[in-house]
Length: 407
Ligand code: HEM
Image 1 (cartoon, rainbow, N blue to C red):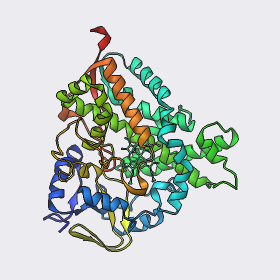
Image 2 (cartoon, rainbow, N blue to C red; image 1 turned 45 degrees about the horizontal axis):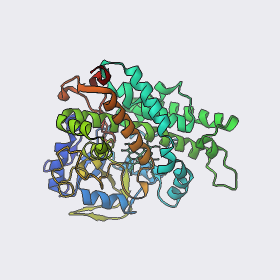
Image 3 (tube, rainbow, N blue to C red; image 1 turned 60 degrees about the horizontal axis):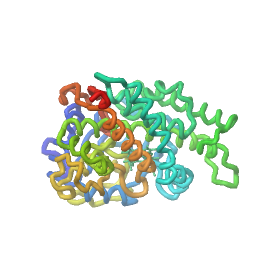
């Protein structure tokens, strides 16, 4: 049980092209399956909705970066050693449990409440309009023109990070998040850590009125972050802030274009937009397998007993296609009640940026539809998905745009 007939499932290229049919098979077979990740780490993968929620909320599925390193060595079947993240990037809230998690998260929650985020609406609209002006007409890669630059600009402005090294930052971030180019990981990690250490130093010398400067300058009386915690916090916010929302926008528009009836419905009734964003998140969410957790004791997950000290990954994409929770789960329907999806996770690590991501998604897609008639400019099967178990996203999305004003 929990293993395919031929032994652990090895995740490879075909998985990235179509994870949904692999998930459908695994969901059918058992609550958790042993898999081997592309570079050789053995983990358990959870694909059913109920069990996904259970694992995400139960403290026996723990996070602790020090233990993660030790366990990675134990469960490694690949060549050489598992490549670890640069140690100055890992001491952030998504790598730790309460009480330390509670302390770190408390320091930044205020900056991301729905009210604070709503205040960003005019600026997000302005950035979107500028990007759409620049996109022009004709054939355009929507990832480059809108889906990537919008969220990265917003998060850089929020943290008051200069934009001149944006391309370097994107390259390091892509390498670290995909994790499939071990030979580049050390260099990318060190470069990223160096860049962020410089950012912290700049904010010490010349604070702005952004909340990251406030964190750097917290006094001894307030809760104070040490240098590595500051660097790790900046890393998490910048990476989480831009690796994900790009996929919400691009995957969402891609699925709208593949389902013209749904696109027409949305054009005809724009009050459907918030619900459509939820369906984008459910049907093809930006995060596939949530971040690493490990068992602190033997734990029963549905029909499978997962031993102590094993890694467990939850596929949010798979859970959101579980037909026992979402009827006709493989049907893309922007009018369905998609609430309760797990695209933002669940439990204490539930996404801090969810209100910001939803707002960016609504403004981006709404503005795109307002301004343009839009069609896919490539056969859907020719588009390439990133070879990442963490992210579900397209490398590029070629579309044709024609100004609606011209009609
Ligand atoms: C559509 C876009 C987004 C999606 C789908 C998404 C998804 C997620 C998920 C699934 C988690 C939990 C991971 C786990 O438990 O393993 C998470 C955590 C987190 N997200 Fe997002 N995210 C998005 C956008 C953002 C944005 C814009 C920010 C902005 C700062 C952000 C910041 C964070 C942070 C800080 C955490 C860690 C929370 C904690 O550990 O308590 N996310 N996100």
